[in-house]
Image 1 (cartoon, helix red, strand yellow):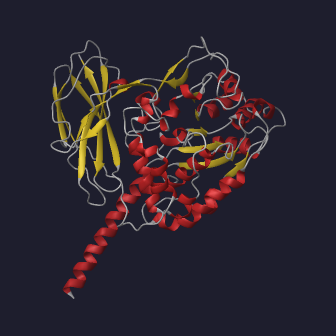
Image 2 (spheres, helix red, strand yellow; image 1 turned 90 degrees about the vertical axis):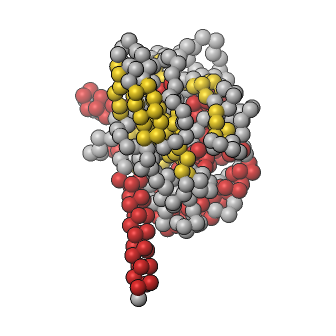
Image 3 (cartoon, one colour; image 1 turned 135 degrees about the vertical axis):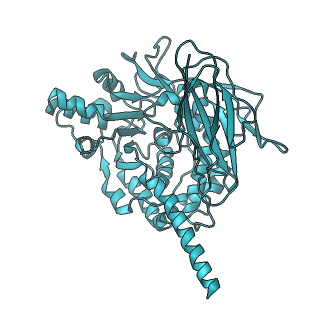
Length: 480
């Protein structure tokens, strides 16, 4: 009897712990999003949609709209969206064992909508409304103060039509109110309506790498094979082992690469709540890359691989920004990792620097499709012992601490504190005291002549399989 009571108490404690950790994801304010996808123009849309299903409890998906693009100008394929959702249906009960909040497959089916099977601006104007464009307006008019992200994986003319309709039917004040809610992240320009939108609505929040070549876009960092680093997490063998085979029907739906793997995924990676991502601040850097607000130069540009006629930007947009980064290398003795002696710089770096982390996260969630809670890995939880916004004076000593961080599976944790200089305003050379891999780190604020910001990122990684990472961003305001 005593043994049974002890077992019961332990079991209840485990259930309460699991419940508390899964509810954390559910109760965070989620980013709401509508996807525009030219699915079947290239297998990568199907790939990105399979991954998105695994994060459907982390992002508030309000619609998935089948659209055209420059690669598929007169047809749409909503049936392929439904195919992925039906695969999701089969693993849905198992996913709920790992985290709560996954939407029902029937709900996801109900928000699949059609755009017009017309290319670009030929599908924009009076009488060009579609299920998709009307659905965007409906969601904008909902009693919801959260921004509405439009994650664009193909052509953007469905959004262009929604904006046209709003301008034509709403008074100026109401139109402005609705448009201010919009946030657009588009995977380059894949029809001619993107530039029209940016020119016609100069205040619209718009992330894009415009231009003549996909190779000049930040998002290609997700599949860019970088000489001098380990690229194994984007290899065909890695996808076969960790995603496609032996992971149930959702993994089996993930197609092989034809052009580039998951080129559309960066359009929502920054919406996943991981402690690093803050989608309202593209300049801070995140899983989807880092972007700055400026008007890019048009000099020397010609039509290229996007097959979309390009023209100069007429206003600032959120676009390519450079990072300087030294990858972390595992060590056989002493500290677990050290920065590489090689340094990489560029706009693609802002995305691929996080690639192993988000690929491992993808693999772990794919494990959730078939494994029990005890068999799978779950992300650690960083907990600061202080605020994530600190003000320090020049020359002042301070300590950052995350001693209460924990792992829901009881895994051992590795800490790593790093400075993200491009994310803050301070541009001088500055570092913190060693070691960088303890649960706390000391520093002395640099000398400044006016208030400056410095971003310090805690990277917390467990030793499960695959190893999972979460972050905590601390913003230091340094005053004179």
